[in-house]
Length: 607
Picture 1 (cartoon, rainbow, N blue to C red):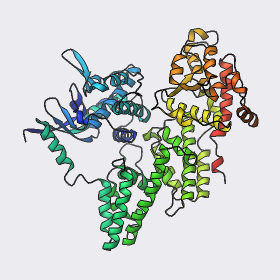
Picture 2 (picture 1 turned 180 degrees about the vertical axis):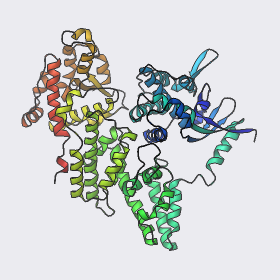
Picture 3 (picture 1 turned 30 degrees about the vertical axis):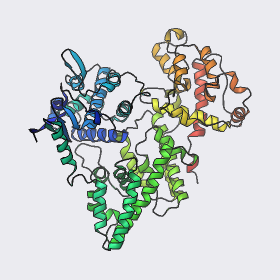
Picture 4 (picture 1 turned 90 degrees about the vertical axis):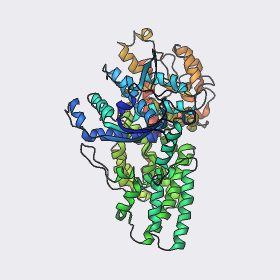
């Protein structure tokens, strides 16, 4: 083995004006929302534990550090052998911060040099992969990018940047964003190992991951639990049960058993969570997020582990809850009427859903009881999402995790009747009042995916109640070549509407109102972008539209008996419009208030 160098580096030292390459066999960027959520939560929580109000930026140098692990590099080209996922994700985070600073009219001297640098008069990204360049340019310049025809890495880059925008906590506001920058640059540490030859770098990578320490937390937990089973035959039986369960959890999803165990332990056993204040220490919830095998051993009394029979029960409960968890994961991916609310919540990436759904389950519950419990809880989650969005509150992981954990403990192992009572009580605290909030409910970048979900739910609800095919899945499908997008009924041309609106700001508020939005196919949406209302209405009422869009015109009210009956039975103020301005938008808002009350209500929680 040739010369090997190891050194500690800060994030700034690692990325500033330094080029990296990624070899062809390691090119895919694979991180999903879960990994980004954990990264954002770890970094921002560590920063906030040190930050005190009114701290100067200079005080940040004395804050605690955060170790991000090993980076293994090879050759003069700095080929990343181990660390691509983290460095790429951190580059996306830097882009988010840079875009946010630009909007504030602020700058940070080193941040752009950590994203891209210049060599021989040519600028390129520091992590340089040719097929990502167009996408990275769009993200860096805060421009939209259509990744529908791109490879998985590019799709994941776009998705994870959107996740960062969504998940970055409100606590790190505009006033302390530069403090966070200082901490991120100089207090986030890595161990960089560089080998002259790539073969040597690969050997280092294997050595780090192939000697005992490669055991996963679930494997170490299994070893601990089975070691407490004294009977050889029983231990062998339980080992087979664990193995079979682990294989089901990890099928097409490496590490899936670790993910499940964290969710299960948090849902059923964890009693404490770190306070959201400086100097707070990790508690059950936080420790389980890492070395949960150690937590089980250290906190075995919380799990009722004492005798060999207790450890046998633990294994059988592990297998039982894993089966329920797999049902939940399948319901998140495949629409079914019985578990529709789980599917809806997954479509807006509610990360903590499985934890809440497992909380009320009792070992031994029948399949029907489990279905009832997870459906009731998923229904509440959907209303919780709508209520927070309408109230202008964040759904970022860091913002809601403490509430979700408190609710998890409240719902833990309840009967169906008691679950309904608790969910009704929580419902009453949400401040969900569409008739009071709807006029302030306008489209913005943060609300975009939620408003698309809401429009899809409204439109598919009308379809279903009218005896038509419900197309929610189609409305939310982004993998198709011609997906549905949010359509503004009013074209973005203030000059055409000066007589009705006092200024452009007022015009944009009304134009982006929920009452002035629809869903249309992307190609139709693009073709109508500058059209006037009369021309748009023709498309809305064609076979290329949908019932909610078509209800703006006369055609929806002719030869459509199911829709007419639905409108009449529920006294809904649907009507066609020849023009579309403030008065018409206000009437559509009133219509949506009634539809919201029909779609998102507490009926399921009533005895």
